[in-house]
Length: 239
Figure 1 (cartoon, one colour):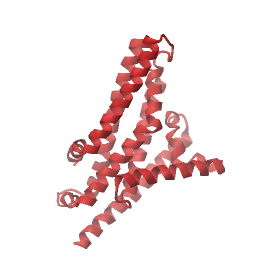
Figure 2 (tube, one colour; figure 1 turned 120 degrees about the vertical axis):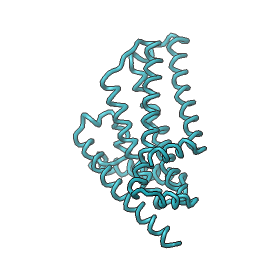
Figure 3 (cartoon, helix red, strand yellow; figure 1 turned 180 degrees about the vertical axis):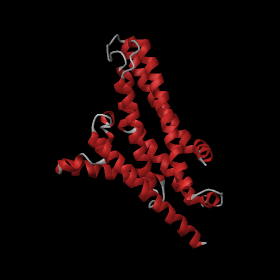
Figure 4 (cartoon, rainbow, N blue to C red; figure 1 turned 180 degrees about the horizontal axis):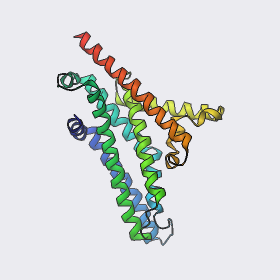
């Protein structure tokens, strides 16, 4: 199932478009960095700093948006077009279908992060000297984990909304509301997913953050699958 879902994901026009945009933005970052260091003679970063700084830039908006849209597209398009019925005919369990969809997106995210880390290390090594620190590695792993949380959240919202764009819009509105609530009630800020997204570099140094992420994974995954299961039952009933 994973191979089927991963291939379907790569063949989507929206996925190809998002990957192109991601690549252009990242190459733009590298170009600005290279021009500043080599062309203008500026010391923008020390050895290895560009690798983590480029991740910070992409985690601000681009990577969460890509994950939200790809996951929403993976689920919404199946239900909207009715092709999900073809998957139900396969000799696999329903949870395998649900998990394979999540894993297909998460695997592509992992590939993107690895490629970005390698390319940024090469660029940084050529301009400032190679410097791969433990903080950089844990930062990329933390980003992968928290983007996975966005992946699961998007799959859950896809059970209620009819378009990928609406999933993205509702999520960002919810994040803005949570940020406002976090400012008004500071005690709630630490358990807000929107707040966690900016703390991915600290995921292994803060036990409370790690525990909150695990709790959200369990809660969103269980609820998401239950909704996915009910949606399948509703489709079969309607026929």
